[in-house]
Image 1 (cartoon, rainbow, N blue to C red):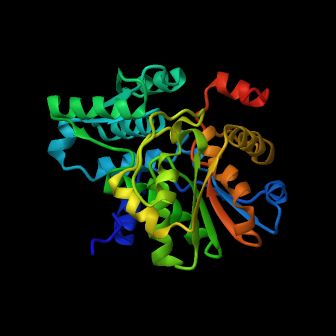
Image 2: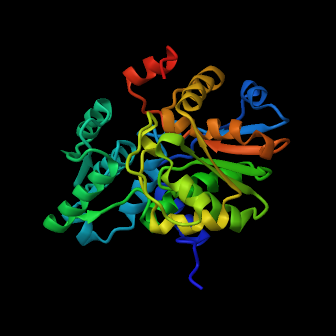
Image 3: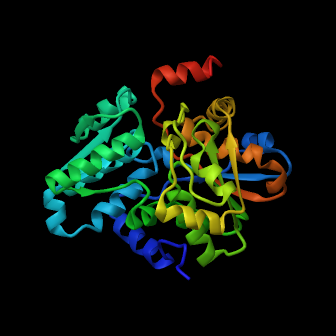
Length: 326
């Protein structure tokens, strides 16, 4: 039988070694007010990936993927599709490593993220109506121009990079009993399960996705890959319409539970995180907290780790969240 696991703990440790010269570990912190909001005797530990150089965990995926490339592919350059954070990570890593980066985004993408991508030196291509159509654009450019395509999720090196988040968490706080991850493509969750299986097999791993972009959640519960015709959520980092071959089987094999949360719950989680940690998160970055609250009965009495995966919310969306317009 083929293993569902796309990476091993050795892959994670090798990725961590490649990332070490470029990134410092992000803080893992607890906040009494967040414990109080969680209730049920839950102790919450939040991993501040929103403090990374690009404001999101995906700089790990990007660095891990680019540092694994042979020199000939580095010289030709890379291309990727992104709603922002994966592209920002690639642009930052590419600038640091001297690798040309092209990022494909859909029309109507977050203008502040587009500006940041250009500022980091990436070539920006705006095409398609959503993330999945931007992926098709990246695949076409890869074929036409000989560029190495770097998928945010469907790439073993990127998943190993995402897994370094959990490696740091469990090394710093070995008494964690559960982990909750937001899922757009699943790199964090699959990375977390890989690390937990090797270091703390008793740790339960849960996932959360937006109701408006619930393809992987729905597929997990159905037991088979499914696609949705659209992905509509202000948590643009979760706005995917399909499953991914490298992560879906592992999600099916290893998750203890998978929930979907409403736009209102995501918005409330952004406000709660701002209030309790005094730090900013985007919708996808708040999904772990929204999922934690929905999973409260399953997590009662446990020490729970979750990831504030990104901070890159644009000003207009933040205004709407704070004014309770979502």
